[in-house]
Length: 240
Image (cartoon, rainbow, N blue to C red):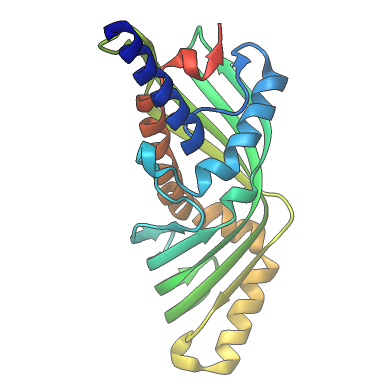
């Protein structure tokens, strides 16, 4: 009876993990890149809407932490930021290097960010002053995410991935659009001039000032990836 009860508990735990979305729909050998791309793609919509049983937060829409920065003459802050688009991510490449203990995931998405901003100083060559709502649309935002990890064993001797740091590269491939309300205390002429300049120079604006916003999103994604790997041993995610 004791053994049967233990087996039943294990089966119930596995069933619960499957139903909750914790267990991947598709398991792959780590060296099978094509399989990993497919498996990660299937996990995207499940992971991004949140997995309460795994303490995985809702990531789309993502409630962003407030941020502020002073960069290249621009003083900028964003509060009550919200990011949409992650559940539409397209996985392009997955490279799981077990020798260097680095997991690399390349993906792209159309991203939409809105929130309350304040800005002062200069944006590239033009002065800026504003306190209002901001909306950003980033078309084909390409991200390369690198997760460095250690392998650790749990109390049952099972292997777990333990992320220890991350870094990322990003590039907007197909354009960006920025809308900011209440620029220059509502001065229409100055506002239109600045917005035209920003949107005509979207690539430079995004490259120079987009990283602080991306940092906030990447930090939240990483935090939830850490939780995911804490919950599941490697053998339940991959095939030996």
